[in-house]
Image 1 (tube, rainbow, N blue to C red):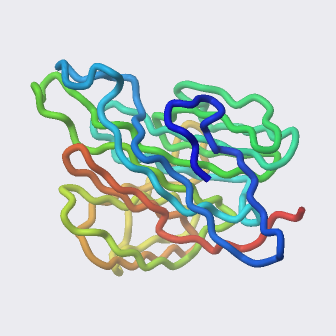
Image 2: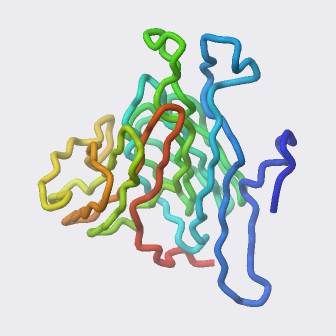
Length: 260
């Protein structure tokens, strides 16, 4: 499926339901050729049509049977003062999502099948839903700062599918790509239990603002890393260079937990 550029809102495929007609398994990727997130425009005349800067997004979608109701989202390592963007998609009627704390901007209301909302979060955030949801996590476009003069800041849009707490694992092995200036692992861990990266203990701090999970954002080098979480955790891997970024979930159980 492909949506024609410039066609909105009908051109947005978010919420499309795709099913197999012959009971065969398949995978689905979603994304965008070049998208921008954010409201700040650069201090020059090179990007007059909108926020700087756009980037390609592509991510494999989680099967509907694996969606969860509870999320502990560790926001990205900030480059300036930018928030992260969340897009929340419902699959069942009367879906109500509660945020702790409330988003910096945006609300969800009550969602029906295939409907979605978009919010911005400035801090680590827990989500609780009355029905299973899919949560897209996005990094904003390159941040322009006054003290940078005419040099664009690090990062650009990236997309990851947030892992629900129901799919958290106790063990991960992840590969951090080379050639990026800064690489990070964000951890959202249970309220109890120790966490190690490559055998070294990780210092975790409470989510705060009413949240019950703990969080850490750890700079890491390129290469393989092993994460152990005694009571389970969620892992997001991401990195920045000038006007470019990447982000992906470090893993998940992918258990079937939704009954249709």
